[in-house]
Length: 225
Image 1 (cartoon, helix red, strand yellow):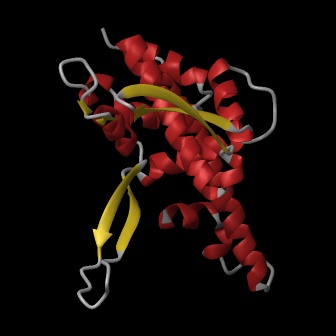
Image 2 (cartoon, rainbow, N blue to C red; image 1 turned 180 degrees about the vertical axis):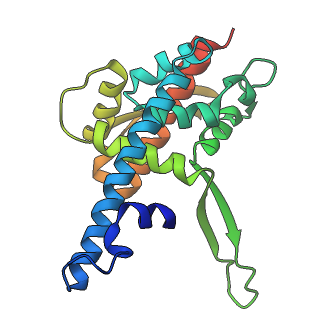
């Protein structure tokens, strides 16, 4: 990269030319080159990703990704982390532990939506301090976050049915259906929950978990035989 700077930004190596004496102008010229260079590299990288993901091997996966309006780079990252989808299943079926879908949790963790817990071990405290932090791919999580902010959160018409579901959960209150046992009978109950948007930053995290759950369901329903 330093060699590229010397070849492309002449003011860094040639004293005989007449340039501005202000340091701010030199810094501005360097940053202008960096942004232009990154833009050119990004175009070439996008073409490379498009060629790779449009091969026959990934065609069915891309059909699912397109329902979420994922960009080319995001689709490439998704393939990197979740292909093949069978890697998360046991004998071709989701693995459950009680009522918890362990296959889904593993899938979400690979996409950067997993948690790790650290206990302080402070014996002087009445209760151990538990620190919760993200685990998994930070790059994948940042792309999903950017996709949600640009594609799902804005109050604009949805282009696909999946995006419509995600927008509805972001903007409108949700109905949570759960089951309880009373007098030995299993009874269905309903509870109204606030929209994801009303929950602020935590709501955006919940939106990503909901989005990846829909993605997991579509991949397993359409690709697992």
